[in-house]
Length: 349
Image 1 (cartoon, one colour):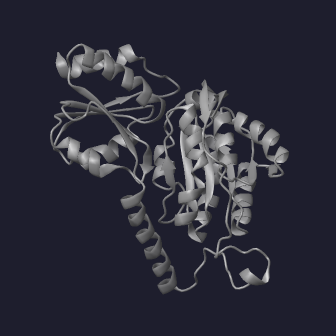
Image 2 (cartoon, rainbow, N blue to C red):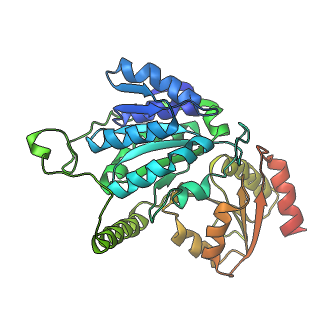
Image 3 (cartoon, rainbow, N blue to C red):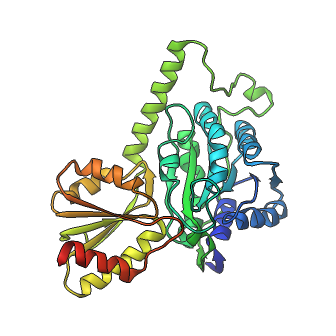
């Protein structure tokens, strides 16, 4: 087992390479630039392809082309760049192409700033481009998870022929932590649907256009059935002190780490507070959270946005619980003490 001190942005490249990534296409943007920098060093060293595109729009369409030919391909960007990629992501979903996209979120809207935010949730989880589609979305909360989720990203991507998005943030991307490398390298097999340019794949066709309304409707229904299957097989989550909790905080990414500390402190003081952290944002692990809502009185969502995940959590609650939203924007990140103080004021005063 090897251990390296890495930024989250660096760890994700190591994970993707060990997971079999063969092509990186991207355009640098703060706070995600170290991903492209690290890929530029490591991909060619291993005989793989790194190409800095002229724009994010070009990069995502290069992913489309390489994935069509069976390559395990990835890119990385941040909010404004992901916005530019959304048209391509819709085409990728329509053509059912596996790939990996890393979003290191920063504050917006518009140009915003380079501080952390979680305001790409709706754009990424709900499908930011046109049409009825979803990406598989993981929410890493550490450099270790940046590595691990990237390492195994191509397995669900290829199984479901879908884009996997790692929805991270500037804090996780820039934070340096020890990262353990335990897994064996994964290699890509030959996909039966890809266009390899040989006789064996001559009949394969990659497209997202169906001129018949009947065929387009059938294609959409096939996609929806795939998403329903994902919902039964892919959800992942983490819990802390939820079984007897009267108050549960739902949080993801960097916010969940801060909430974890607040929960531990409140437990030491005798308050029955718990943490529910979704690791997958699509499909959202709603069944387990719903069962916890049967016994918890209060559900708090804590996010660096104006309540994106809160909408999903409140839909699951359906009025069973008292729900509260703790939100921060613009790059402001709460402290453990601030969260603890708000819970004491709102719940236990």
